[in-house]
Image (cartoon, rainbow, N blue to C red):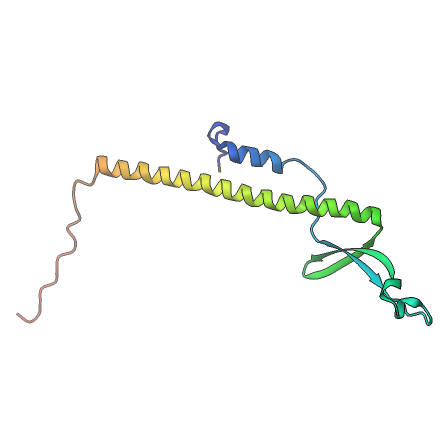
Length: 140
């Protein structure tokens, strides 16, 4: 496969490509905050939802079909939230890049079809196929 001439690459594809090539920490998954009850007798958390322990910040994602979670400090949870947001933006940029490249590919196909139609009109076919001779009927 040959690479396209950079001058022939649409500006939108070039811009999106540049955006995608900027390295940054990205993350998939979700972040949640939980307040939990403990199992100690006499602890107020068993009776009063306001007295539950926490907040516990949990980072969750799926890896090879299995859910993986880990607890994070509040500071790390803020950092993970920014990474998740950057990951979502990256996913949107990838989708926009796909769409721009498909539009470009469609334009190339459309121009190729127009060229081949034009060539077919100019040159045309001089002789037509005569086909196979029909077999004679046995009934005669």
